[in-house]
Every structure is written in structure tokens, then in C-alpha cells.
Image (cartoon, rainbow, N blue to C red; front, side):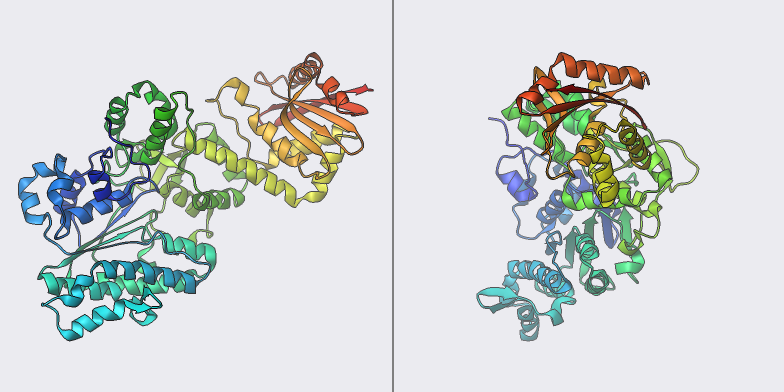
Length: 568
């Protein structure tokens, strides 16, 4: 039997003991040990294996773990001297801050106390340690005490909690502790969105400063996150920080799937015929000098293919939180930035200076800062083109999955922007039953020039009109009293947009993209299709007294509207 695909499994011990497939990243441990700093920060986008790697570090270093079983057969076991010296030799503190969220600072700080409190409970053997004094045991008890059946931690010990745990562990084992903090920047992201950013910055600055600065009980620390938060923000006075971003060559192959990883997975599951599709949709990231796939996407799509060999690729990576950043970026775009977005959507590259160290407060200072965040979080990637300035990158959209995400968000943004001008929208919509072609065409032209259009030369010819179809549909749906259908069976086919008004006026719209730039010819083709497919007759059968036919042609930011009418 084949191994199970590890969908959503980010615990290394669970993955290795339950017969899940594992793309071997264990040599990350060897490279870390050969190049470690006292505090090591790795920044990578979401879903690229940060948590699994951190769990692997915990399993490798922690005293008392079943390392022989967990690492049997992995590459790291070939490093015999290194394994003898480090494997299972250290106390480990491991926390993930990805759940530290709240509507306000009180809720978020309570969530942080819970996360650290849960780790302290895992280490409760300290309360019985023969190597700790009664006073030291009392310090441990202050971190976790029972209240109404649950362990809780008080505010007054929160900022010292990690330092206290490292001190107690070092005393108990006679060995310095290793600290692992996963998703360190999530609380700042949530606080920025929730309006309590300054308070969270102050809390994390004190918490991390206490445990990471001049802590003689700490062997080393590893932190992961999406963004490299400015040193002045939460790492003030921390001079022992070693940062590894997606631009750095070192460690470039250990987060995400390499081409070799993907080939081995597809070969193992008999899916090699889909390699080109997977490359098109989920490849395209450049970490350091290595081409990288998003592992979350590859695993999910392989899982879908194993249950249905005809499964089509989907957008598995996107989430609401990340999309908010893209919406923020699009909403702040001036005309020059809109043109740059269009160029990216067409498969082009743009040259931008990227800041890899930011605070969330700086995001709105400049549109360039938002470019930097989109790069750091995986919505854009770089191309390995020689440049003179080390901070200048040629940016591209990495693959079809992210491009589709941008397209969908641009459509949403366009509709939201249009709704803000409700008076113009009402005038535009009224022009359809009034058969006012001049107003429809003029206003459509204005919207096209004000918006970000989507003209992807990589998609099939019959898909190029999708954006314009969606844009029209979004504008017309502002009329709550109209019955509007998209791609509904009407007559002998499926009309692009069909509308029934309370006045029993039927409207049929056929959208065409003029590939050769001949808008007039495309309009006539649209009207001809309405006649041949008898869309108007289908509307009359629904009781419409009058049926107005519209052929609307687009080519990039140009449009033309033509019409015809059938009376009952």
C-alpha cells in the first residue's frame, strides 16, 4: 500500500509514525547546525513547510524523544558525528503564535497566555524536579495555575514566561535550552487589522527581548514567519539576530518542494502525466537560486487526482487574510500602478526596489512597501535577472494559481469600486431597458479606463472575455428588482447575460472579445449568435413583452455596443 498524503499534517512525529509520505528536508538540521546564529529567523510565505520544519527540529533536539524511529532512513542520519553530538541532547521550548488573535488586545493577549501556558503544562515535570529549589518550583507554578478547571497564566508573568521556562529547563537538565517560535509575526498582523498594533508590539518586544537578549540559559533560538519585521519594532537591542529571507541562497531548498521533490512524489503515486499541469499552476517561486513549488498545492492536487483522475487544478493556497493585503494594494493603486498590475497579469515583469524589513505601520506610507509585502508573502516572486542594485528585483506573478487569485480580486475590487458611485451605476443600468446605446458605451469606456483590465495572452482565446463578462454582471446586479442570469439556457443555447425587468422587458447580452481589434465585426457576431441561438424567443416564452438584444465587443480598454429589438 502507498503512503498517505500528509494533507494538513504539520507535526513531524505524527507524520513519521503514521505512514505519511515525507519529502526529506532533514538536512536542514545539518545546515542549521553548521551555520547557526544565537537567534535565527526564517521568513517564508504561508504553506511552505515552516511549521513542519520547526516540528522536525523539536523532534531532533529534544531530550527523551524517539529519534531513532522518527529519523530512521532520512538523510540526516548519514551525519553520524553531528547526530551523536546533538540528537536528543537539549531541552526544547516550542510554541506557535498562529492562533494568537482577538477582536481587541485583551483577547489577543489572553490567547498568547494560553499558547505559552500550554507549553508550560507540557513541561510540568519541572514541578517535581530534584534539581530545582522550592523557589524555582514556585516560579514554575506561577506560569500555570488552575482556575475553574483550566490552566491560566496571569498578565504579570507573561513577558517573563519564556525566559523563566528556559532557566528552569537549563537548571533541570544541566543543559541550555533551544527555543522554537513558529509564525512569530501573526499576532502583529492580526493586531494591525484589529487596531491594537502598538500594544501588541510592546508586548512582543518585552516577551522576546527578555528571552532572546543576554540569556545565558539559551543555546539558540529559531523563529519563522512571513515578514521580516523591522528590528526597531520588536527586536530592539537584539544584536544576535541572523535573518534568512526568500532572497537568500542559504537554506533555499528546505522550504517548499523542489523540482526533484515533485518528480519523486508524482512518480511514487503514478501521476507523472500531470507534471506539466502542476508546474504551470503551482511552480514558479524562486527562493535564493532554487525553483520552488508550493507544497500545500501540490499535495492537495495530488490527493484530488488520486480520487478523480480528471480533477482540474484549483486555488488551494489563497485565504481571506492574505487576500485582504492584495485588496489593500489594489485599492491604493494609482494609474501607473494599475498599468503595472495589468502588465503582470499579461505575464510581464516589473522592476521594483524591495524592502525586506518593514513594520506594519509602514505599509501605507508608500505603494512600494505594499509591493514588498506581496513579494514576501508569495503573491509575487522574482526572476533571476542580473541587476545592479541588490534590492531591485524583477517581479512576476509566479503561476496560474496566483494569477487567477489576482483576477478574481480585481473583479471584486472593480464591482466594489463601481458600487461606491451608485448614481452613475443607476444611470448605466437604466440605459439598457431604455436602449440608450450611447450612454452604455460611454460609461463602459470610462469604467474600462479607470479599472485594471485583465488581458492574459496565456489563456485560451475563448476565455479572454471572462473579465468583461464578470465586470458587466457585477454592474448590472446592482439592480435588486431585476432577475439576472449568467450563462442560462435560453432558446437553443446559453446566453452570456439575460435580464427580466418588472416592466417585462427582456434583455439579452452577448459578450465578445475582438482578438483582431475589429470591434464592429465582433458586435455583429454577437448579435448574429443571439438570432441563431434564438435567445430572444426564449425570453418571450418567459413572458417578456419586449426583448432587447445587445452585442458588446471588447478589446483591451476599448468597447463597442450594438443592439436590436424584437416586439411580441
